[in-house]
Image (cartoon, rainbow, N blue to C red; front, side, top):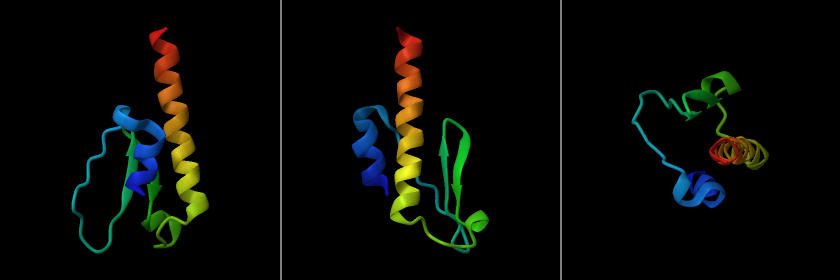
Length: 69
């Protein structure tokens, strides 16, 4: 999944991996939670779900670029 995020944002994406307990997996973008394994019935993200998260990252990066103009 990290490789999908890097593919979307390249050097503009920073990924922080923090160990959890009991299978916790959460993904945040700019402080906003976009995925929580617990909230999604304990399921790892499917490919379509990863694509949704990648689109969120793309939109956020696009908004940052637009704000800089």
